[in-house]
Structures are given as structure tokens and as C-alpha cells.
Length: 300
Image (cartoon, rainbow, N blue to C red; front, top):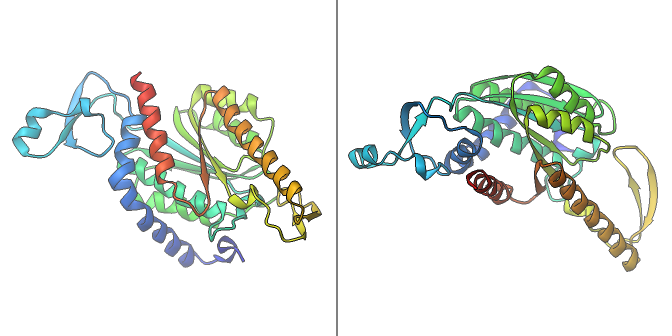
């Protein structure tokens, strides 16, 4: 049984939320807080105060006089670095329960949600949550603070899909209609959805959208097990597949890889940043590379 299906009591959910907090806190403090700050914060002209340097900060904001006086790096803060709003838009459709490396896509989504939520609150930003399948399942309005971040993680862990299927349109249309303040939007999904271009265009005009694309290696390669029964978790369709045929397995892999490339090319054509992430593998370096490449584009 999937871990998410077995968690029922509030005590279990909170315990697992705190476990994820512990697992991601060190990464937030050592790497992502500064990177998030430098990528998503604007720099204004009016100086407000100083704070200790965090890894990922723009070195151009270092105050060398204070650094020499105190013996530790400090950066200058400006008036335009006011609070921002982050919205986590998390897919909870049936396909997110899949995982072949001791971690489901839903569990990976929970860790990513924790990482991003704590990065936001560490920078005194607000963070909210929208869970969706083929409809909007639950909304947690944006707020600040550790207690609120734990609630968001708990909701991601607890909320199961009410129905099969994925419809990103409902989530994007909700963002455009309800979330009026410009927000940083992380779309966390395997993107087994189609025809959401119009809704994405409306959402990205109002918000800064980033797609975190969740994958599992078993979706790319079929093991040579002979005839197996396969169920499409999104549609419920059952089928029999002969995986012993090497040519069929290779054609399947080629098809899936082509779809993955097309998906990333699609986001690039829409000028939406996208990051491919895999269950059972570290997400740290792919996200660091994302922050670094985005920061370089901003400087260019």
C-alpha cells in the first residue's frame, strides 16, 4: 500500500510533515534560501538594512565596509525586496501515486513542497497551496510562518485524489481568477494533461510560473517480464503487454523519451522554466542548476 493511502490520523500526518521538514531544512538553510532570494527578489534603489550573506546571494549586494568591520559577509537590502507570494500548485491525480524506487511521485511532490515553502518563509514571504486532479481539490490561502508551512506539507500528504485524471486547466484558471496578487507559481505535476496552452498563457501573464516535471524511470523502460497486466491510473483502462520482445520495449522507450523532449520543448516555447525531476533521485542539483541558469539570464 502506498504510504499516502495508509496515513489517516492527524498525528501520523504531522509526524511525517515534521520528518520532511527535518530532511529539507538543512538544504533550505545551506543552499536554497539564498538562491531563491536572489532569483525571485527584485532589487530597488532605497536601502533598508543589512543581513548576513546567504549562499546564492548576488555578490554585488555585499557591503564590504560592514564585512571588514564585523569579519563576516553582509549584504545590503533594498526597499523593493518586499514580501512576495508563492503558490504551490500540486497534482494529486491517480498517476502521482506511482513510484518504482521506494518513492512515489506524490512523495517527491511533498518534499519539493516543503523545500519551496520553507525557502519562502525563510525570506519572510507568504506561501499558499492548490491541490488538483481533474478539478481543484483543495486551496490553502497564502500565509507566513513555520506552522503554516507544516500545514501545507500535511495537506499535500493527506489529500488523495477524489477522481481519476489530470486537468491542469482548472488549476491555471483558478490562479488567474482568484489569486489576484502577482505570485511565484510552482506547478508540481507529471503533466499527464493536454490542451492547457490557453490557460497557461493567461496565468503566466499574471504570475511567474515554473514547471517541476515529476518522472519515474520505470515509465521510460519496461522490464523483460513477459506478458504483464498494465492499468492506466488516469483512465482506469486495463491492457495486456508482452514485455519480452526487445524491439517493442525499445520502441516504447523511444516513444516515451520523445514525449518527454516534446514536453520540455513545449514549456520552452511558452517561455516557462521547466525542470525534469525523478523519483528516488536527488532533486538538489537539478534545482541548483535551475536557479543558477535563471540568475545568469537575469544578469544578461
